[in-house]
Amino acid sequence: MGNTLIYVGIGLIIAGIAYKYGLLDWFGNLPGDITYKSDHSFVFIPLTSMLLVSAVLSLVMWLMNR
Image (cartoon, rainbow, N blue to C red):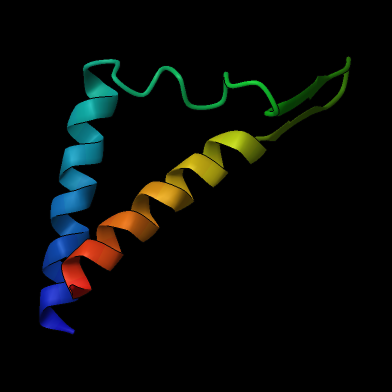
């Protein structure tokens, strides 16, 4: 459990640095991400972006367990 928390913390630090310097501008702007705006509501469903993040995280976890 301790190692997992360390890895999650390092991942969050890296994600924070990437967000600060604009390396995550692609998130939410891929084809397949759903955005609906009206006068009184806003709906954002990042389907394609989350599939890509899931695939990358699955690959990283697979490599770590190997």
